Length: 283
Image (tube, rainbow, N blue to C red; front, side, top):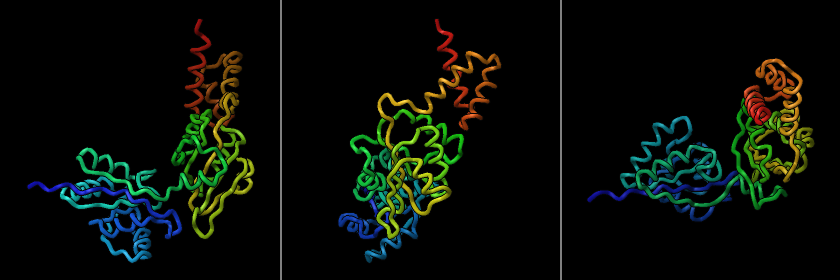
């Protein structure tokens, strides 16, 4: 008789405090044939704290192409796999999504074991609207790409939730101030840990608080644009309109100068200039 496939369990684990784990999660970590972990050292610490001894397999973004098929073969052979991320819920800004897709394609059952999430934990203490929010993950690390990314979401009205590296927090806050304006912001740092800090204020105040770098894991929440709010992106369009009306130089050169002046991507400004020129030339 053919072997029934096993089950892939997506097990949420603590984002800091090791006590923040459900009884069901602990049971499945004990019962699973294999625990696939993004960071085996961190997961081993968690298992040891709860007296669990289980075989660990490393599964992260740098080895998913080799370890993913290995895990899927085990599942196809009837083994149960508990997937855990670095911290929080698997599949959110980590390679768990690839394994879930592979399992579903093969008809393997995927079951979520809910629990801690940095996104919802930070939202609940932020003081910002929670009825509608947009999770943006990590902004691009390159400055020009990050500014283009922020410009794309300048008119989004939902509360915006991002992860950010402590080394890039100050630079991201400065770009947000330039592109989104001085909105309300909450910076949740080291949540549920000994040095937990929740900063609430506006972006300018956050820049003063973190002028260079921060420490620890950071979840960043920013108020969405108000309906009809004018953003710095609107002033970019006006800037381009004025230039196109008075400047006879080639479009690329005009866009390059505007981009340099505003500190944003030349490609982005050129694309906006092309659209604007088409609109202005329409009868």
